[in-house]
Amino acid sequence: MAATSKTAVLLKAVKKITIQFCPFESNVRSTREFLALVGSDKARSTNMNCEVISVVKHDKSEPVIDVTYVDGERLVMKGERLTCREMLSAFQSRCKDKDPQTKAGAKK
Image (tube, rainbow, N blue to C red; front, side):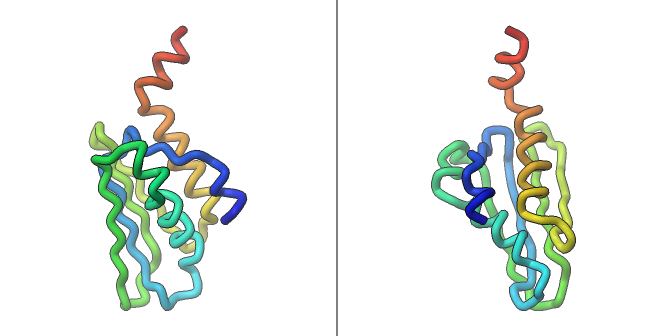
């Protein structure tokens, strides 16, 4: 997780992140690492209106991350076979595409 935490997590374009997992399964490490990154104080300070909801289940369900952006688009990632770096990369690329400041900087 140390390698992925060097990347700044920006939640400006995100309305809500719901992370569901069963903590007793062996395939939830990357999902829990993603939760730690987006739930950190540093990441949360980039958008205080963003809800980060963790749903802990005990039903052997697969880990799922459901991201809702401010424009209504959703990104659903199934964390069973993804690494934290892969999930973070997909998440960040969508956030950059939706950030108005990034778009304004690209036009200049």
